[in-house]
Length: 217
Image (cartoon, one colour):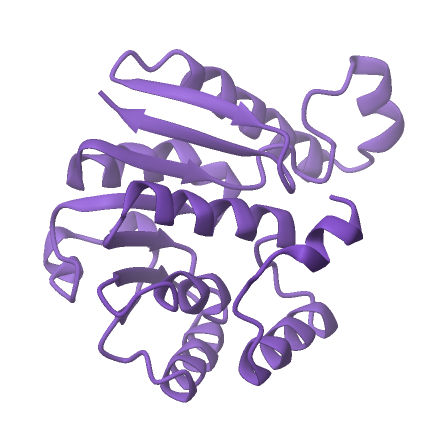
């Protein structure tokens, strides 16, 4: 997105948020892009989402941004890495959003209904998936039973730095490792699978690093 437009947008830009942003950039912590964040927050406002599940807390950047929209928003967010979890808890405390954000320290694939008995509990208005890309299909299948009818699932990083959707020749030139080739293939397979889910209306958007928005029918 043009920086001119980015600078016109009103976002939560507190001292804490600036510090978190700089920390993420300095330590290669994957956080949502500026453009993706603006779209996600506007989507929450437009749908009046109050109960949110996030898969992939990292340092708590997106959870804090989402919870800062309204004191009525409650978020369950899942993180498997203990160091990231501890940093997220510290940041949430600093933001004074303890009553709005419940962090689950667990691998997303091992999370059960009992783990989600925090603030938002069982039926979510919106699910935001931004964790291990190779597991997106499993995350989608595992957590969408807790999504209300008419609720929304947002998946981030579906273009994966512009590597998804390249021609065979472009992939051969730009994707140099076997692991990266496998990850790109899995993301492409997920995108194709998601586009065919009859219980959802899904749109794919060239926002940030590529996002999907699926509405549960």
